[in-house]
Length: 107
Image 1 (cartoon, one colour):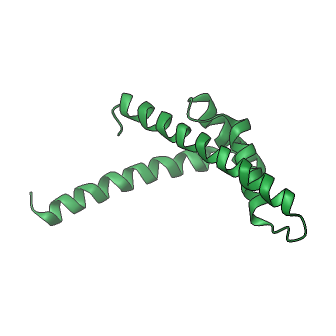
Image 2 (tube, one colour):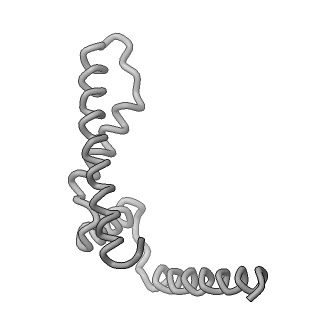
């Protein structure tokens, strides 16, 4: 196979995967963004890739980090310490995801 044939073969695989995903999307009832997000999180939790409560806690922490509290140094420091703890949790979760994918022959 030459490079063009390889590129076309890969593009065909991606187009097939996209078509499958779009068919599933089209078959899914219309829902709000919040419902869609919760549905996706629940699916990932059911598959064993994340804990929804952890994910929501990490997102809340990210939101707290995005806000500045110049007149509240204690709050800033507490948020920073929580972020360091969450970073350890994220690294551990990533390691578990990689092992799970490797065990499934996907990584």
